[in-house]
Image (cartoon, rainbow, N blue to C red):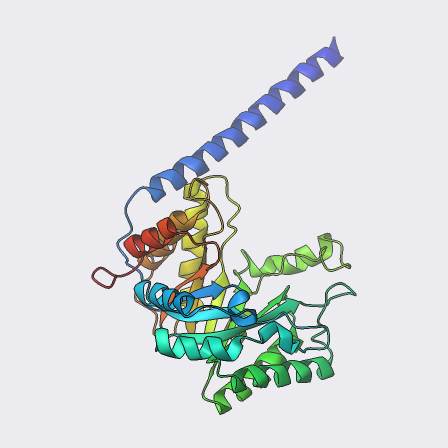
Length: 344
């Protein structure tokens, strides 16, 4: 009967379509696996950053704890530490009780880790459409943030490290805050650094995301990825840009490594001659996580470096997220797989 023949044809077409889709997936996975096998030639650098827990700024520590921190930083060639010192309140302030140990920390860093820059890591959930905490669109809030920055510089921090999330590619208020903060830090001879998500996959897709993904309530916005133009604008206003490349969210190590490699190559080509770049790598995932962990991330970053036709003009390295999750085995892997030979 005709209806039976139509069903059979439909099932046949569905089978062929599924087979073709599975074949394409197999080709993708196989190609990524083959690409992943050769050992990267590029080595890492001795310009590297570390995000550190709030307790260093907010709580007292023993002299031995400071010595151990200094030894850790020196041994692993960390040049910049982002000590969590916030977060900002809604009005752009940070209560003094939250950073009551900051001055002692700075003294200990000068003694036990001379030359390592201690930056005040400050941020908050950026208020959008009524969701979030800090409204950077309000000039009064931005002015308060700048006054708070000045307080941390007065305490002796070597720079300000911003981590406001989410930041979208049309956020001119954040660019204005960056511009004013740069004026402040440069007037004091200090640094301004910023953490930002990895680049969009395709810049032209942003209007499509905006049209298809419901807006409102903050968390329903399209993905907060900077476009190439926006990342260049940030780089022109910052001494350092840390790319939050971690959370690759890929099903296999080769695909996760490909993600790190692609973002490393693309980011350094785009802004590596403009500012110092740190590619974020995770230590909060267990080493047995075969799809995304520190060894995978470091190998992927090195493969991205291999793809460059020349090194960037400015310093570059990795940013380790985070100090409070990194175990000794991971530090050993980092030294063995990232630091230049003979530097560890």
